[in-house]
Image (cartoon, rainbow, N blue to C red):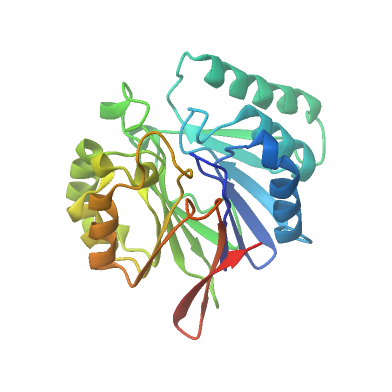
Length: 274
């Protein structure tokens, strides 16, 4: 299992592959780096089946309609997952417009596009085992109590590779501390994962000690833009992650870097991808 965390400025785009399958998490896009992003994704997905796309939220730092359109056209995934939160913004409308376009195009095709709108209180099980063969997916959020907040209704999902070489990668979107209070209370050690995608790009408002201790990751990956206006990742967040994890990596260094993370012989490795 490998996780490719791409530099896309102040946003997130990651690709997880294991065996013959892959899942994309978020679709932030940079017009001036589009060729580079496309090349890296195509190379990483060579001879892999992209089974699904997870949009952790509907803001453009996680759900860019341009990136989503390219991925759906290029790789024809079976499903797209997003929080059951119908945000009335120009970006959200554009995202659903892209989804509808591909739904219509693929009706009657060998692989139609399925929508999976998730909310914990409306699911029979948090374990979404029928969406992939090579991965187990476990959902922790969103919940109805946070459907009025676009950050705290983010999808929190554990993506775990099945069998040899697999590990647990926790996807967190923009989930902030008030929501983490409840998630940790409900699930605690079930959140335990080897690799953590830091919530909200390393914001101090998402640096939750209880969450960090429950997850207890080996590696933390922070996706943030170079010289971004929010000051992400915040020193408080980085300090917290350094206390619980063996290593912390940030995309917003130099001119922006992408990372590849994998496990070998019980040891996790992360290197820069050029």
